[in-house]
Image (cartoon, rainbow, N blue to C red; front, side, top):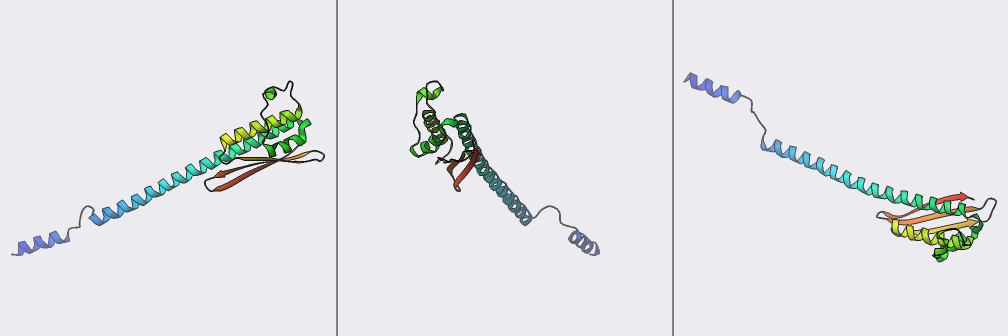
Length: 158
């Protein structure tokens, strides 16, 4: 009988081995929360990437118009006036030969607005002109993002 009692004591003192079901469930929950966090971070990075692309395109559009204004200094007032009516397409102005400065300004604005409409959702472009020495232009590009409206303004002296 004594041998039987010592066997029972030895088996009850032996440590447990392996995972219990509760430990496995806790590990699974921790892993699931981590994976959800990674997925949320990925979605946020996609949104930020889209926003950065739209902002880059807006900066490029404003810089493009600034270059067009600098190249056609004779039509200073025509650029500001042309943004109100949207400009006019003038195929004769595809090259500068045979095109008046004001016509070129209208054509530049027409092309700028067409490009902006293709690149930016809800594009609005505006040019404000201040007659001073030197002349001051403020080129404003507005568009809509999923988070709301966004605006970029570029001030140049020409």
